[in-house]
Image 1 (cartoon, rainbow, N blue to C red):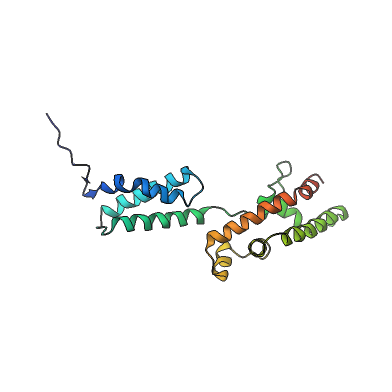
Image 2 (cartoon, one colour; image 1 turned 90 degrees about the horizontal axis):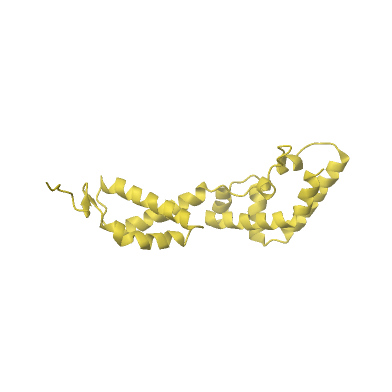
Length: 189
């Protein structure tokens, strides 16, 4: 007794041809814009999930354009979900005392030795920031010290948010390397 199956090309009223036709192209497109194969695979899976949900209820006239638009939107969403690097990310929370770097730097502690270290840190921070290109320095200062969101910075500069995130990341990496000796002193205090 043979069972009758729906052809793969039309499963539940959904055209299945795009999977075989566009999977590799979509993956290459997505992979060129994200950090890893895993991220690209996750986004591709989200694109196909949205395709299945949409194609089940609506007719998609230009499948190629629709798929690449959804992929581009999913890539943008993934960047927005990523946590930007923060001042505490330069030097993580001290595991022994559960004290963050930011808490130490912005504390009102009156201990003269700690105050000397904090003053030295702020001097060295500004010297290290001056070593950065202007756009990286601006992204870091506005986000960390002026408490502006990365999206606000991007909008004000007329830049893409990914560009601002990247600039901030490069600034954080530079500062992490440049200020490591002070971090060691502060955390061993």
